[in-house]
Image (tube, rainbow, N blue to C red; front, side, top):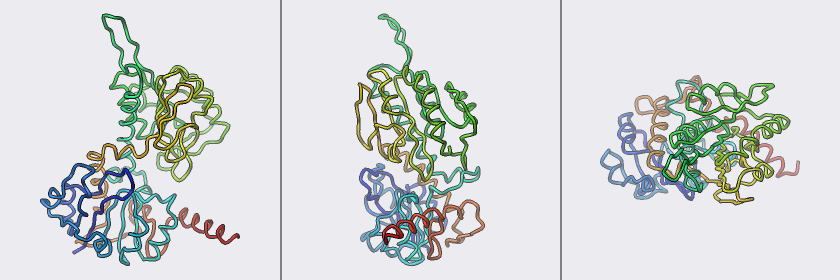
Amino acid sequence: MLQSFVPRETIAGELRVAATPETVEKLIALGLKVTIEAGAGAGANIDDEAFVAKGATLASDPALAWSEADLVLTVRGVHRENAGRLQRGATLIGLLSPSEEAETAALLAQRQVTSLALELLPRVSRAQTMDALSSQASIAGYKAVLLAAGRLAKYFPLLMTAAGTVKPARVVVMGAGVAGLQAIATAKRLGAVVEVSDIRPAVEEEVKSLGGRFIELPMVESGEGKGGYAKQMGEDFLIRQREIVQKHLAAADVAITTAQIPGRKAPTLITREMVESMRRGAVIVDLAVEQGGNCELSRVGEEVVHHGVVILGPANLAATMAEDASKLYARNILAVLGEMVEEGKIVIDPENDVVAPMLWTHGGEITHGPTAERLTQATTAGMGG
């Protein structure tokens, strides 16, 4: 029987878990034996007993569980010490940060580990149930609005009171991907007036369907990238975009930035000068802060106040709602395994249009081209070549 292991996450502040009692039951139905590290679900309000009640076994020795597992399911990758414990031929699935962890990939390849990075999942319709980036980004977009509303010194909705009328807050959302769309919907539910900037004209209809007002940009070319993501635009375009958006930011109470380019530093959408043009008391929530930030002044995990403008750089917002985030993430993992597990065994089909693109390492090699290239560049630089 295939031995699977769900460890407790080791990254500070990571409260999510890669399986829930609901998915444990279904993993067992797929023919897997499921072992859970004690306390793995604590951050998501899941007791060990809830896992055991669905058929899971608790690991008495986590280090041994790592070494005996045929399959490891994680949320935020694997510490190199644990990567070194994995048995040869094991399979690892999680958000593995392929654009950052080239050395970990090398270690996994050396140990003949097959690793699948959920970040590399192709954006195709049949893969929607497996799309962990989207399920977690939606949570981040929702929570970003709540953070802004909690920090803003005024109401979001229009209010008509005996003491007079209170105008609704004005919110600018920059980037209408999954996080941005959820931010639009949440801000509208709270009664704000929402304006939206995005370099992909194709999202205008969806923005309007949620009640947002689309900010028209001078598009010489489409900003649509591969898989529905935005692509990297030239500096001339970004300058024009900032000039247009600045006028809207100057009147805004809240700005939420969500623009990210897979594998690249996030584009700078709000400069120092743009922050200084905003009104005192305005709030910026930068959801791209861990990728370098959309706001020039944002700092990871910090609150920065500049010219009276509050700039929030929250890290890993999905983990702040670990209970629901874990439910969605665990279902994403289950859907991925549904493509790979046959009669209780893992089968990697190189022709599978969903599984194959996610392969980070396989057969003793780094199969993700950009990761292999980064490792080669790092090695060359280290040799002084």
